[in-house]
Length: 197
Image 1 (cartoon, rainbow, N blue to C red):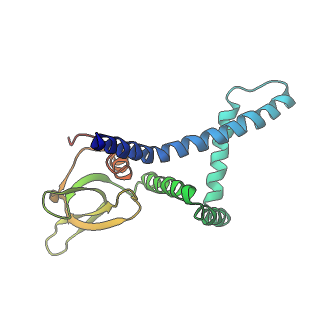
Image 2: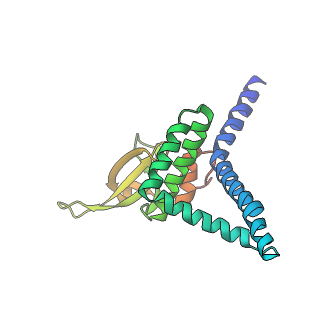
Image 3: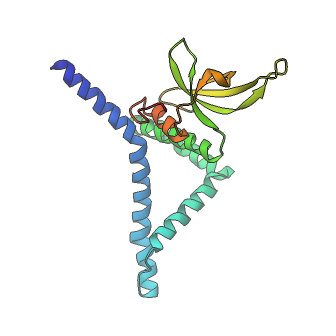
């Protein structure tokens, strides 16, 4: 009975950790949407005499666009750095923010198309396969062999890890998308594909 309770407790805790990035994203979007929809849209509606359908969504997208502009310049980066220093001093908020930041950093790599493919490699010891991401290729001048540059992320922080340069035939292609493999790493295996194709 005690073993079953520990099993349930551990899996509930893992489930909560896995849901933190999703909950953060949903909360942020809902908060911004509610602020815009309830205040800005109503204010505009009062001036023009009627509500414009879809105006809240358009303003939300515009808001994200300007946040993206601010975040990509020097002043915005300094502001984000200042906020991070404050959040680092609040225990629970610090952990939640770091998880969300790691997820954002990981998925921003996908936007830049840095990661080519998700693979499995026999890295630490024989018959123990780890998730890796092919970042590119290099050619061995002596043999003419094409080698893969593979980033092996650590769990649950995929922004740090190891870099291995190995032959392509030393990898297994599980036919997972980059997103599926990333979810598996971030969640510690809780979320992700349950089959190697």
